[in-house]
Length: 193
Image (cartoon, rainbow, N blue to C red; front, side, top):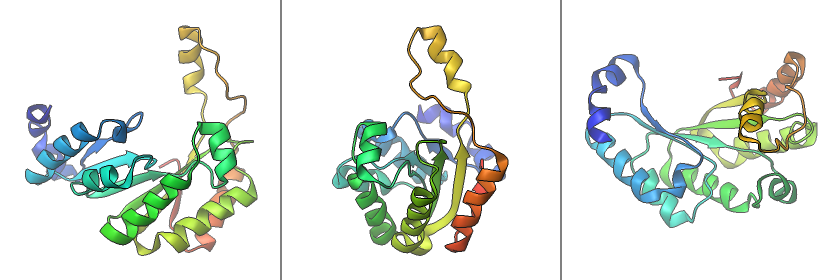
């Protein structure tokens, strides 16, 4: 894999891009993540990790040693609702976000999927913005509001799997309202980026 990555090193350098591990969840394969990110970092290739941070701290910390930018997903701030919608509580993920920002000072791009009827309430959005601004501090360089879309529905349909999310994409006006909440907390907020 690294031999393929090295072929594009000039592209990364000239474009300001990076090698980004995303998923699924890259922390589900921590040995691979640690290895490939370490090789990239050793070759002076910028690295990024997109994660929700659901891993034991020791595993996460080891992977983060070779990460230049952390793309951190925040799905819901209420632990019970987070568990209802994702199958796990958010406590470990929030603790790991705090640890990563305080212990390692890695630049963070907070990523918030906006799913109407699930996590887009004023209460949850404000709690998310407050946590990011107050708990993660200066490490956060941006907050990205990622609107729900229906692109996965046809894929599930072709596989014969029931698509359990029943909602519509958020309106542009609603996204702008949510963006203003993050901006009130002093966070640079972007829609769809």
